[in-house]
Length: 332
Image (tube, rainbow, N blue to C red; front, side, top):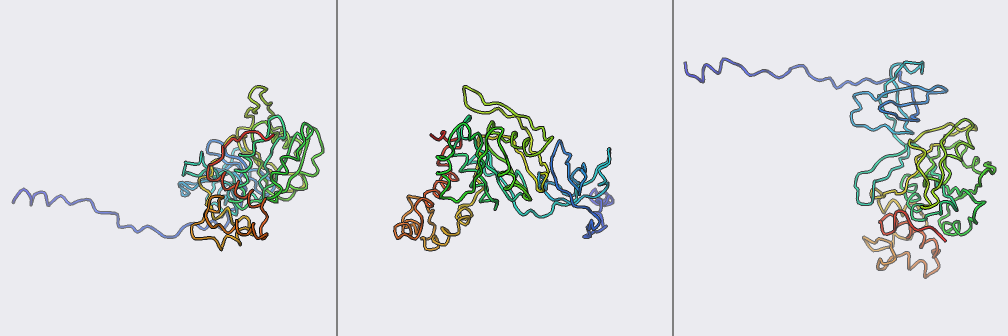
């Protein structure tokens, strides 16, 4: 017997013959939870009138779970102390607020799911408003399919009119507040909605939350007298229930908001009146001021489009393209 015949006696291990099942659990008995916080792999979810702590099930793999998600919970969802449920499925999202680290970063970072309103909180003074970041928040809202609301704070320190005039052509609704003032006008805009608060540190987001929700106890910081910037006091995104119905999502203050993930066509579609005009643009038209034969210019010249609105849209587009500073100079 040759050496090769001797080796032939040692068969290679056979592959497993047991077929993998295609059946997957249906989780028909799973309850729906609303993710309000995440902390080191543990998720707090509202289920009815109780809070449930849960962890992500292994079968979800790399599927992300973020604040605002509606999820299916399996296991112990009683909310009793010491119990832990499992997130077994993420319900399809209706909206998704995203950002990238900067305009050259192709990796998008989902922030909040299923919110229908983006409340852009801006102080008219201390710190001074920076329109570059406001524009970026607006682009993110339009991209996510969310209603933008401009919330001006500290209006007792300066006249909000110059800032409002900048965004009037875009048709962005606004509400004005002042320190220690009445918040009823803001409440009317928030009731029965899921709203995300965004803005610079020091503009008063946490102060608003504490005024709207008794016992919220969100930490409040101060603005540096030298730099004119606020200090980060809120370090995590948290969802709170509004007394009259609806939810408010408070986010940490940020100073940049990358828009690399936003598609230009989606931005123009947020302005139906302008989108209808651009169907006459040449193929590949960027709709900017330098774009040759852009139908927007022809429409303005013919009186079929509002010149201020087109200019405002192009400012947003420039912000999306990164041609404006992320942290623009204060308005005067």
